[in-house]
Length: 221
Image (tube, rainbow, N blue to C red; front, side, top):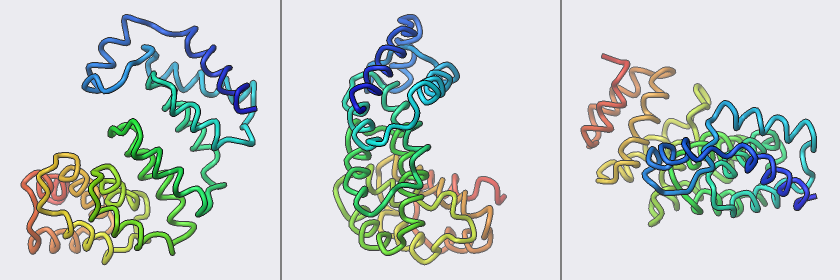
């Protein structure tokens, strides 16, 4: 089934490749990956067509892995569409796979989805996974795992572990890395929708980059 679904995906997407779109899409992503040139609305419709015609593959983990291995970026987007449909099936045994997807062909367009949705869902269902992994990630040498640790609670709202969020930010608050500074600001800005004064106080007493501070306070005045 893995091969059948992947083959169908390759055939369908390749038939809609558009070279005139591919160049601008590649440049927008800083030429990190080749593109087929399928814009997001059409690509989403093609994903829906795949699911209508082939269903959700039982071996979805292998399908995601195969799609992730293909060169053109749109295949990773289809893989994320599949992950969206199977996220309730995630178990702790899937965490190594999720880590591999985060750290393979890494860029914000895949990492942010995997952080906020895939990792966020997995950690909400199995909270015992949170602290040992996120602590290691922010202390490790992979920027994208650190960004994931900062962003996995984006949709948690009142269920956000404030103590953990602030501790993780303090661990990397002095980072010079743009993607970390931006993630800090984004995480705080999102949490500020739930606890504005807590975020304001944290920003006032914590050493943060100007970018992180500006993003965190964006809607607080």
